[in-house]
Image 1 (tube, rainbow, N blue to C red):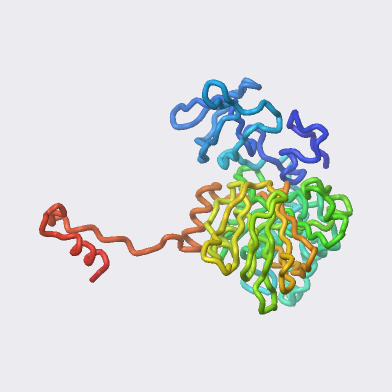
Image 2: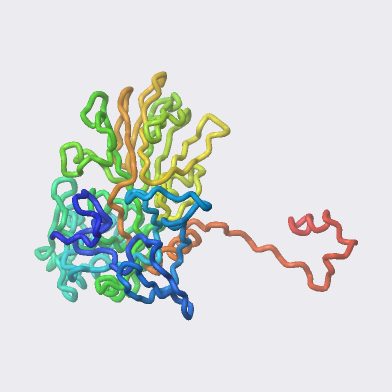
Length: 453
């Protein structure tokens, strides 16, 4: 379904902000992904009234939770300013304004279920029954879900089989067929849903039915009311950045493309691209030699990695393999790409963060003793040899994840519940009867008391 672009300056462009989610939903017009700073904000009674300079429209919004950056019209002293260019307008993501908007009532839903897990069967059957009988929706499933022996012999589920639409990964195209995605399982189900949509992805609502559940904020209790709210458009979205990855073989046509951003996804070259939600991992594979690879940023050689490998991750992936390798945890709304070495043979090689949108190129060093292996979100593992390269940049199509609360609270809740971030026993206070300023209490006494000795 074609939608008319709401952006006045996107005519003739292959991509604009209104194409960031699937054709059915979008971000609400009053709460675009980016907040332009020519808008005037007035605080009244703990909320903001926003008056647009271009439209003269007044709307009341909840206080934004983000920190605003520089204004595109800012001055640098009496004579300096930014170059006046339409390509140089600075905007900054505002998590508080990313709200889901349905152009039409969603009709089709894809249910991604964790397979071979008996504990998920009960919630799965309840969800399918409710979507078909109550919401009257068309439900899509992967064909291997129906091949589960436990479902095949379930008398209560058999009556719904004929009313389900099935497909096979990498064989059937789901583009523009799915309005909404519901995941039942762990983080792997969300990663799998991402791989199914290598262009525009519908909104994803993930229920925690797995082990860790860092990316699945919803509990299945009262699932009906939670799904109803989302289908009615009462939901916040977290736009999770994805990476666009292309493997360029030596002397291939892809290797001659100046920037992979310019590759049309519908072209023969574009069909070889892979969109990644967590990370790209380049490692030494089964070889006993260390990995020796060169890292280019925007065409410039910035370093050579000698170690077990390298992780190129999104902010979403910063809490996965990257954090285990010593990287910092970055909120998914931060536009960035992380470069994290795996066991580098150097005491000074620390993880770094580069701006989203830059293009990275990873190649074997000319004096490398062995080839390397590359994998994408733990899948599609393949070998790269001398002359081959892996080119990576930020994808134009994020994964729109539905929030249980909001973009900030969900993330900190998961840090505390799943990773036990900064959990320790609290320090006891000093006895109020003691005067800490008493010269009789030496620093040595305080030190031993704090450390329990």
